[in-house]
Length: 67
Image 1: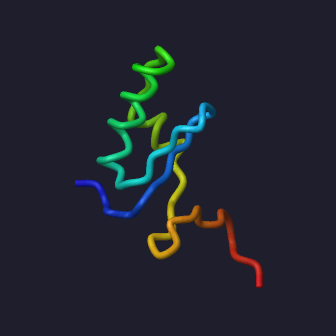
Image 2: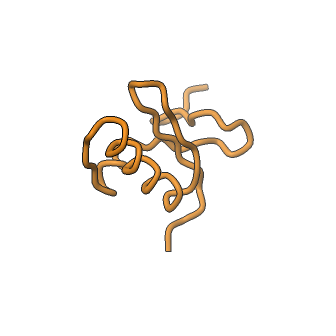
């Protein structure tokens, strides 16, 4: 079972998806196959996914926070 954190994946064509791991993986793979004739794997999708702050729906900063 995947955790329920929100992730975002964006494509260079401007398409993007936000959802849980189980939602974004098939959506990204389908987009790649239908629009770009590319095949991807779950691992590739997750390697490119950004965690999303569920309150603001914006990407969370990477690395240690600086005050």
